[in-house]
Image: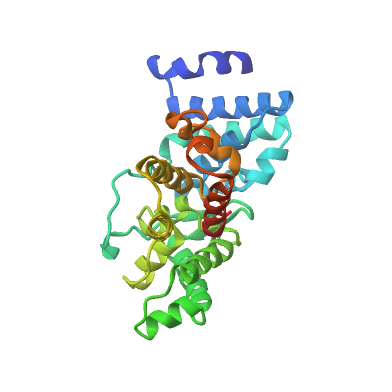
Length: 295
């Protein structure tokens, strides 16, 4: 049966009278079992199952017979679960998957009264289920405690524009205290709790505090690269290459020397770095990206 699900799972949507959501969930569980046996990376599968469970409606989460299964759907539990435990999860939750909430790709911005405050946020590491309204209160209380004495916010309160390095420090502080904490304020949870998609915690902070003077991370990186380029007498090829480096950096949030010799920067030629930049100039570029990196 496991073999059949692994082979025909993607075709089930073409068959009549099939609960596609249930069979898709079964398929994920069977793939996770196989990945465990073969030693393959299973992080993406685990995350997908965790999100499926997190989007189940209240009547499932509050069902005494199903709640323990939902609580088992955390990254640590799933990664270490025995095959029999995974089978129990599939048996209990698969039939409920057709009821899970869909996250709309249409986002409502600047309309806080339109945000749905019902439902739960599942904190995957602890398995705790928190009402969205309570989750927002926790997040905003943490933010106020963090930014009360931060130099960047103090500068704004004085009517000054904080420099890029202060804002970068604030972004790293927010990342550590919100994303890496028990609050698990991931982009997915921001979307569920606030109904918006943000690129950085600075963007989120600007939204929550309604302070336009807070630049986003992308704007800071663009500003820093522009200052860096303006401070040098680069030719047109070098500037085009550095703009591409900026784009790669914004995607990865970090950069190392091998990245300069990898796609998409190899579109300029495999040896573009060596042809257009000296070793000292390359070191300067890497020093800039190290200063801006968040990871």
